[in-house]
Image (cartoon, rainbow, N blue to C red; front, side, top):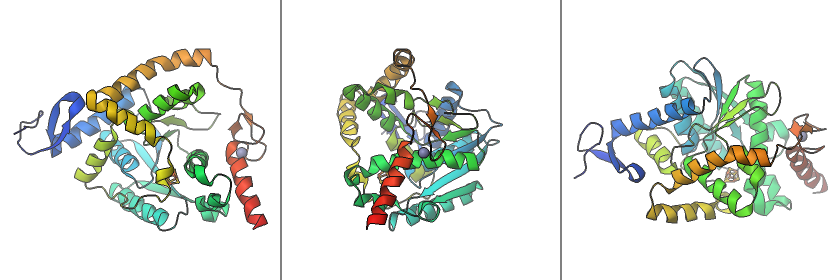
Length: 308
Ligand code: SF4
Ligand code: ZN
């Protein structure tokens, strides 16, 4: 029978294959928080006297993120930023879980209701030529809105729940598709795109997806129990499956990918300098084009509405 590596108790709840380590509930939760703290410190993501916005979706990753940050840095001022995407049933369910979680942590919550603020929902893109790429559209919209919310909430740093599996699969995707400029976007600490905008940080970059779920379950966090109806269209899944197969052979494989790419990123940045940024004519956000991809998508969905 396995024993907890930390305290020797016999009630093991987690086995971490990459470290050949079994842990009991208390030691697993402490180990998880310690890793988040170490990651923040390793990449100098923020100081304890900062104001940090956390993008929370109601899912396991962002819920584990905001909860563990509040435990790792008790003096840190956290603000929760949530987007209600207007996906029937799913979005209201997610918002209700986020409200419960932040209430239990006594953290201020900012909600951006896409329907109320912009007059459309993510569902409306199903009527456009992007209907098969709805997750990519959703990602563009969310990235922009979180930047806006970070400005409104006046936070210097914006933390997102990208986990080890997300990052390693995007790294593989980037490698196989030669999309090098995307690689620099997944750095653990991204400087602001322009003055007054937030730094973006990924404190869960060393936390595997499964452990985020375990942290939520054993920490009894209220997380969503409904899946997004569009989730199966996420193209990155095939790289996640590939990672799982490699990880069966070598449980540390995801960390190997992460560490090698982290070493490579500065070299890639030297070879592929950052594109020149201008300001979007419509929203005034930094953009490589006259009209940013967010505004282009919005124009498209509004035109569809007008022609309906
Ligand atoms: Fe958006 Fe796709 Fe995630 Fe649904 S699964 S919330 S559409 S990114
Ligand atoms: Zn714009």
